[in-house]
Amino acid sequence: MRQRQRRTFARLFGSLVLVAAAGLTSIGTSAAPAAADGPRPLGQIVPVPADVSPGGSPYTIGSATRIRVTPGEPEVQRIGAYLAAVLRPSTGYALPITGATGGDGIRLLLGADDEGLGDEGYRLTSAKGSVTVAANTPAGLFHGVQTLRQLLPANVEKKTKQAGPWKIAGGTITDAPRYAYRGAMIDVSRHFFTVAQVERYIDQLALYKINELHLHLSDDQGWRIAIDSWPRLATYGGQTQVGGGKGGFYTKADYQAILDHAASRYMEVVPEIDTPGHSNAALASYAELNCNGVAPPLYTGTHVGFSSLCVPKEVTYAFFDDVVREVAAMTPGRYLHIGGDEAQSTSKEDYDTFMTRAQPVVHKYGKTVMAWHQIVDATPIPGTVAQYWGTTGDEANVAAAAQAGTKLIMSPANRAYLDMKYDAKTTLGTNWAGYVEVDKSYSWDPDTFVKGVPARAVLGVEAPIWSETLSTSAQIEYMAFPRLQGIAELGWSPASTHDWTAYKARLAQQGPRMSALGITYYRSPLVPWV
Ligand code: ACM
Image 1 (cartoon, rainbow, N blue to C red):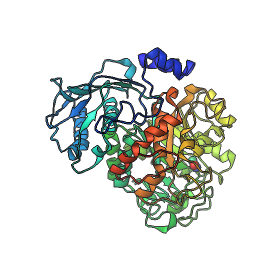
Image 2 (tube, rainbow, N blue to C red):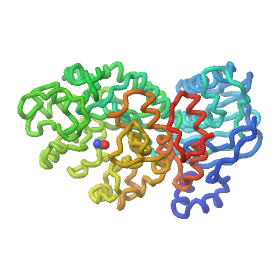
Image 3 (cartoon, rainbow, N blue to C red):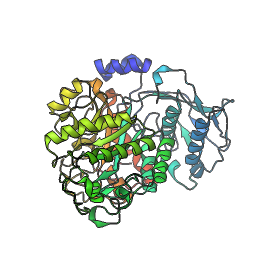
Image 4 (cartoon, rainbow, N blue to C red):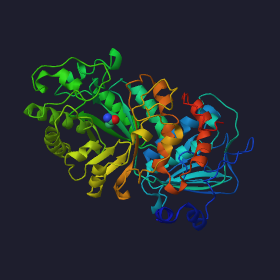
């Protein structure tokens, strides 16, 4: 409650009033450097917390430190084990996990008894004898653990023993997200990425409190998910990729492994089957899906807009129903994304016809429809979520749909697309939406980017990465980092904290942490890297 009131207040009157009224320390100014072996200043993390009150003695993790977790709660036990796995190699301490009785150590407590923390918020209290993370939910505890990680020196992320001290500044952080949806998308179709590569990306995203993983599972160049009722989609349609490499696909067990890993990081998976365009891999796998009954060859180029499911044929709907049924049955999350972008080989009439039939199928199998924002030119059914990927913010059709109740996820391509080149010197990526330096990627407001969209329509943000030019984890990471952090902060932190100067100082401190994690990030000249 307290949190929500403060944020509403901030929206109305701006950050100065927020700071004055709430008695916050200024987290909007640049970072005060920590003393040589002193703790990092409380709150100098990404995304910046909603509320930071520094004060008192720091907590120092030592050889006697225990991780105390709420007893009888397996998820809290698991989060404790996750934290221990981060801390043990670098600190060299045993960090046994034990029950929560006892006031010392690192304490993970479920049951914060604070409505304002909501489903994902947490409170972190650091003092001489203990550091306590309390939350209403395991997800909140998990996000609080990410904050705890970032409050420790960057070397804590290393896999070998490092010199301490391992201090956490004294004080209290009270934190909860601005938006419920904070996503990242990976295109596993243009180039295939293995389960291990996706899990690695999940782990990196979790550090920045991303909670949605959108998997772009089908496109012209490859079908990446096993469908029992249409097996050739994966076994034939998944066997290549851009440039002609061998491609690949996820078996149902592979997909389950990704789901399990995402769930362990409190991330919901949003599977996408792109329709009616971007469908060459399906059309190549089954001749009967084509209007002329002839299967086209597999495609390994990078053009878009040349393929369409055959809207007049009934078999198209049998295919779509089977695929949605199987993907929905495998997926515990709320959403199923049906694409709908760049359907340039589908007439407007056919596009309407297809989307009018397709959306209720997703509902029939218990999922909420997500689609790229072109869905607003058909008729979104109640509940459909449109993912905005435009660049101008002038799209009156999107504004009208949002006013009529369609919810939006914001992924403006010239801000949130992580595959855009940073500048003319970037060798990877594409530049159809322009060059997107780190400041540009951060400098927008999801609530106001599209003119005429009411703020209540915006569910959150997502940073997609398209893989036409990207085929390794190192390449994904170079393009994602450090722009991903900016989108994560836009998704999590109160609008009142938005400030490039303060942000870039906090981002700079992520450099050594990313290095310790083996992330080869882009060292933007705009960021004062430490
Ligand atoms: C898209 O970038 N075609 C959604």
